[in-house]
Image (cartoon, rainbow over all chains, first blue to last red; front, side, top):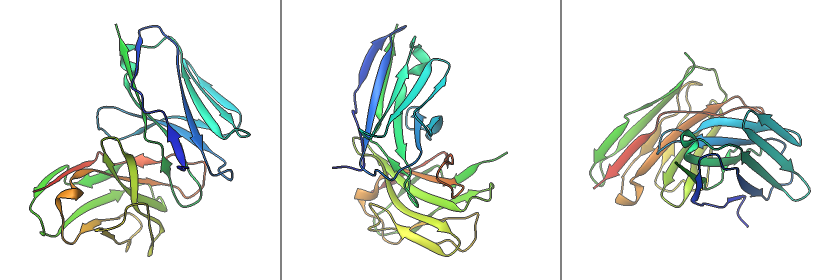
Length: 108
Length: 113
């Protein structure tokens, strides 16, 4: 099993839709998790951190399920500007492990 | 301004010609890391460093070398580049704690012909 796995997509959704991505991880010792956003082969940038059961920031909600070892990212009321690749990051000590990324395309 | 700076941004080189990609951060981060990104394979870690003079292999270290003589710099060295090292490379840094954000350089697009 890979250390971090994501559905690569692409997810094609209309504007205004709600979309959710999942990310599973194998290291049960991991304590914190992150979602990064990457635009068109530019550098990844932090979107949200997930330390406890969940975190909400405007239209974005990240949730953590330690028992099943997955984190999710929910985007409500999708905008065209949300089109990007979303990377799940699990940092065990000494490393940053990235998922393959989930591509989102929001259409008018 | 807090940043991670990579150079060069774009490089086309020939097989076997040694090259170095530089990475510098101004945030006094202990942890630095190099990744390569290829279509369908995501970001794969090449090498990482927990502090000065401490480096470890990531998932795809073959064909690469690194050094960490100073805290701010973490150069990536390709002693004898080959076409399969054509990729997009990112340097990242962060504080050593687990709950810390990673900052990325703008990337280096390398083509080996």
